[in-house]
Amino acid sequence: MPSPARQAVSTSATLNAQNQQDQKVVIGMIGLGTVGSGVFKIFRDQPEIFFQKIAVKDASKTRNIDDLDLDVLSQDPYAVVRDPETQVVVELMGGAELARELVIEALNNGKHVVTANKELIAKHGPELFDLARQKNVRILFEGAVAGGIPIIMPLKLSLGANRIQEVAGILNGTTNYILTKMTQEGWSFDQALAEAQAKGFAEADPTNDVEGFDVCYKIAVLSLIAFKQVVDPLAIYREGITRITAEDIEHARELGYVIKLIGLAKMGEDGRLDIRVHPMLIPNDHPLSNVQNEFNAIFVKGDAVGDVMFYGRGAGEMPTASAVAADILAIATGLLKGNEPIPSMIIDLATPANLLPVADTQNKYYLRLNTKDKPKVMGHLGNACGDAGVSLEAVMQKGINPDGTAAIVLLTQAVSEKQMNQALETIRQQDSTRDIGCLLRVL
Ligand code: NDP
Ligand code: HSE
View 1 (cartoon, rainbow, N blue to C red):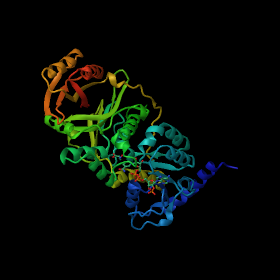
View 2: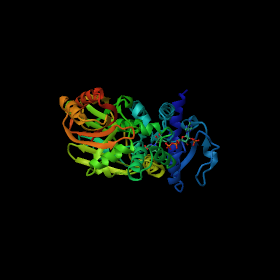
View 3: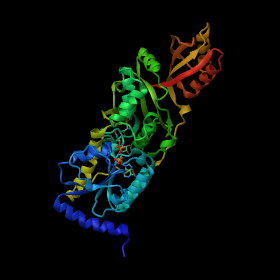
View 4: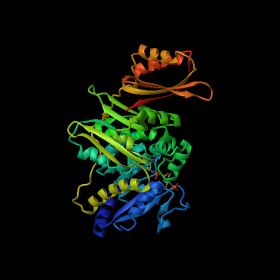
């Protein structure tokens, strides 16, 4: 008696042949929210992409989708991955643990998988890749990084002849939208976040966006593809954008910079990976400074190609659906045309990354602090920096705060994070210092 998994595989082999003859591919989708709705709309008039079952949390919810047959909806995601006729499972639910269980069951049942879930790939990618390889099925995830921008397939295939040295970019649409609106329109953080949520850019829990977790997942996925190195996304040095104030944005502007949340992964000569996620001051003449709203951009540096930049909409219903739908089509074409190879984004032989501690990185720094308004304060600050070997590029007093303290901004030259921390510790202990407002790195 064959096991249920074996039975499902052989049944689906027979069905594959029948579907090939009927020119249709049977899809089961989990999630019909922002991205799922977009995918459904793209294939609305394409009978060869046939939605057999779509799992949602609440089947009674009103959905803004014309001609949706409510009979395809189910509240049981296991019904999708266990459906014997389904050939491709599209996971657009989000979250790591239930999604992992469902994807494992889908792969075990011989189904191809398409997902836009960066948390799932960042946390469980190697395990899922191994299983997909064993089961001889595909798992594609182009929508997981930077929404509609093609980056996974270009990085793996088109740049496959390069030794990748660096991947850096604006990888979160929500935070880029918030920072753009705060910079250009003077919106408050809360107003901009609410609008990003209304537009479908934000994660179910927007803490993932604004505190940088989403970018940690994405840069971990990119490191897996670019460097074949497995990085625990929770081990990545991370800062979000919630500490950034309108004053910081204004001071940065006066100095010739804009503030952006950056995901960075650089392979050192010594084999250590400098990987981090934090806001940075970007010079106005750098191409990343002009990436606005929900747009994303990714710089890749390869030993043969040099610098390449990818740019486009990094979040939202139709841009993300564009990437997911392309993965579905790649698999469907292979299934329908029997002899057409299905692309594989699986990474073989990935090894655990050796991370460079953030204290060992080199950066220029922007520091905003409040001090007592009295003589010699600038001298004390200069001494603290000089004693730690930190050279200053600019020092500005930005007037007197309502509480009578002086607002001061420093811009350093490139120094090690250890040196900067040493200077900061001395400044913190100086009698004239009231509080440290914000420390940011400069790209
Ligand atoms: P949404 O929150 O809009 O949609 C999630 C969908 O999953 C909803 O339809 C929800 O059902 C369904 N769902 C949730 N829990 C369950 C469950 N237990 N069983 C069955 N269905 C469930 O998320 P998004 O569409 O924004 O995101 C989906 C995925 O795509 C995530 O991994 C996200 O990180 C990723 N992504 C999102 C982008 C974006 O711009 N939004 C861009 C790139 C990737 P119901 O409708 O009933 O609530
Ligand atoms: N919440 C994510 C963002 C969705 O704002 O970029 C795209 O991954």
